[in-house]
Image (cartoon, rainbow, N blue to C red; front, side):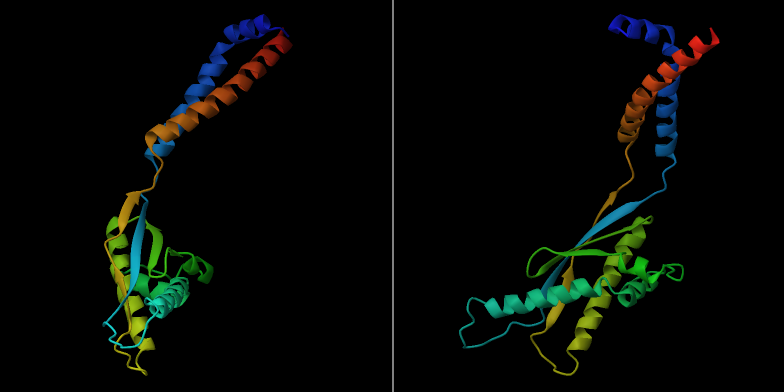
Length: 205
């Protein structure tokens, strides 16, 4: 089939193309408007010390302290993947965890150590206020576990977890993105629907 024949074909059955395109764009619009509210929070945690250690010994530019901070940061990352700690944090802000499996609890927080003393934690919820409450409860719970580790030794220069306010963003798909996807799919399927319409119209003849 030559190009002119394809052009004539689309001119004859162009209504199938526009109907399909409009349908996909309309569905994309309705879907975007009916998305459930969903927010993502990013919290930055830092590993600090309760006191400054005074020593006359050479410290190799605080190499051993940074190494200890790195090991403890790894411990904090492991804690945030523990169902016990995650459940304590959720219950502390009034979120029900009975319907959540152990595997789900393990994946609630996504912690990532950025440096020896810095950890980035990402988590999601439909309630923006709950996200802020989770960040505060997370610090409380982590510092409680940190303090428990020091009960026997009584080390004055002990670790402490410090955090700032989380960065919260709406992670729902934007209207422009949804319409662009709907338009792209509409063009693709509209092309084939036009060919299908042409095929069946020839059969009728």
